[in-house]
Length: 255
Image (tube, rainbow, N blue to C red; front, side, top):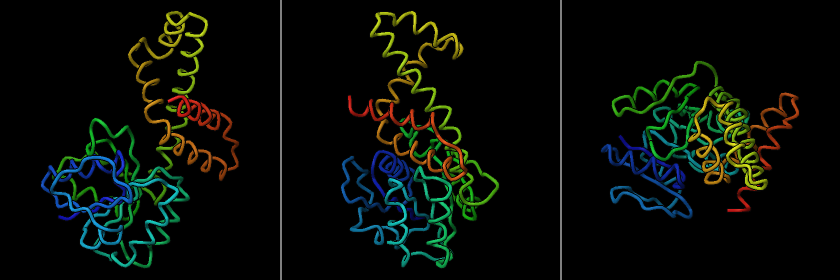
């Protein structure tokens, strides 16, 4: 089996390396790769070249370029291939990309990555929806990937991920601000006690929320942009989600 990874950033490079270790032929492309790759990975000269001989194509880019990437690989697609759109985008963006590729006959899959990619890499829990979801799961089943089938149309996996993000990223933002306030007033121990009483006494979880928000601030800013787009499209003013984004922007600027 041949797999193409379009985008070799943090997530894409982990996926490419892990798939190569599983014995899968991996083709990759990124305009500016920065991370070490398994020597067996064949780095192409373009998205189109990477997708040319692939049975499964994983698009792992920023949502800002996801439509452009899809258009670039159209000549390489057909009904025998699976196009897995893994970017953190709104449901409408996922449906837009599906529409762009519809005439190729490719089996399109809306995939949502449901946890930070390190440390599990390609085994990170994912949701998959759309016509290519079940074929993708069946092809990858022998390799032990944690992909859950979501019944419904393209965009359903993205929708569930972003609804969850409102909660998880919002809680993280509150905890980050509370801990900053605790330090400022020299009441960090007191603040930890207050937060811990709400999250079930899991003190280590406080550090995970804070450290995760700082480490992944840039990616999560794009994630909250997608949340805001989804809520605005439904007529709901995303006040708290916008505030979460602002907190992430503050963390990014301080890194």
